[in-house]
Image (cartoon, rainbow, N blue to C red; front, side):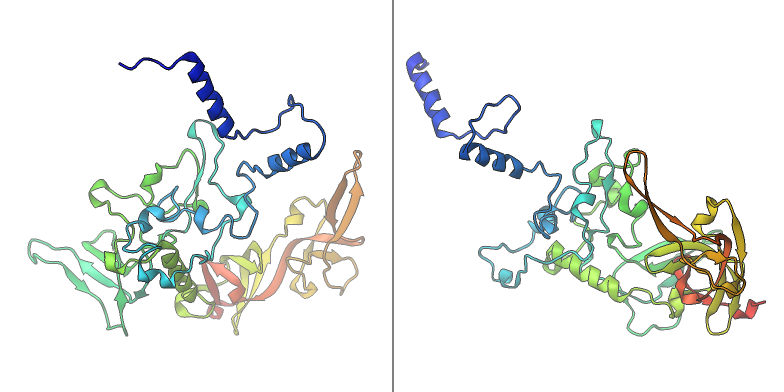
Amino acid sequence: MPSPLPVTLSLLLIAAIAHAVPVTSRLSSTAVVKPGKKRQSLLARSRMEDPGWYRNYGVRDNGVGDEDLGALGDDGSRQDSSLGFNMWTTDGMSNSFPFLDNLEPVAPMDSMHHGDGAFGHDAIYVPPYLNPDGFPTLQGKGCMCQSATAATGRIRCHCGKAVKNPHYTWLKDTPVVGTNNYTLEPADITYSAGNYWRPKPAGGGVISPADKMPRAAYPNQAPGDYVWPVPATADGDRVGLRYARYLDQVQARSEDCDTVSEKCTVSCRPGDWVTVVLGSTRLSAQVTRTFVGNAAEIEFAPTAAASATVTVDCPVEDECSAFRFCRQSVPGQHCVHQKEVQTHNWHGTLVTKFECPANTAVCRLVRQMTMANLLEKQGKACKADFAHAK
């Protein structure tokens, strides 16, 4: 066994290592630093040592590299590492574009990557394109199938009339309650923005601490059905996750519903409750009448009516709306909008309120004419059912 180093030599080695390795430290309240350029340099350095909460030093700082792709907690490196190319030796990287953007980014201050709850009690966020499908296609209506029985011994499917250029990669089976039948419909394998995986994260992808599962369980798969990566793709057909997400997002936008197609509209008749879509404003209303030309009359209570001490009736002739619901006392005058009233409280803080002008009162209910395509029911645009108009 070799003899230990002399004490003097050990101290010399420790001193040499301490001298060679710089030590970075933060300023503390007990530190004594002489004024001058050295103090200014240390203060500037401490301000740049961001703990990670305010990662907004550029528009791309919280971009692709910090997002979950392929698996929660991973930026896509795990899945892309198994692709048959690398950035140093492969000719296939000549078309690489490392600055490909996400079309649905998350603002830096809205990110949930850094939880601060105790004992793991943190909510998690499942992004809509955690597992993108680089080859999305949903052309076709699917089939109605009957399960095999002892008499037939085979599965029978009826796919209806031929569809022009039907093509789809994934199908979702849905049992028909009370029968031996089930449907096969083209499905979007994208997780979690598609309609294939169940259960689908609710609440915009934010999952509460009590409801969250282990990170590896998204998407949730039975042990016998587990497959990775998702979606399953031949090695020769796989592309980088950022490219797959971009292709998937562009395809999704090309298939966005309009307000006139049959598959994107639903019949709305008097008595139906609908959502009024006015730009970024959403409010609940009830259809009272429908007219030829895809027009409808709706009725709703403005938010200010809940706290108003005095309310009045507002017929459709007063031309009231979701933004003008203060009716004047003079007959024949139209409704007006609220005015901004600013005051200071006892502490001197500026307080802003919105109130109806003098000689006006808040409408109890607003009746308004609108185009039916500005109304939504069951997530689809309304189509006025004037056959049931009164």
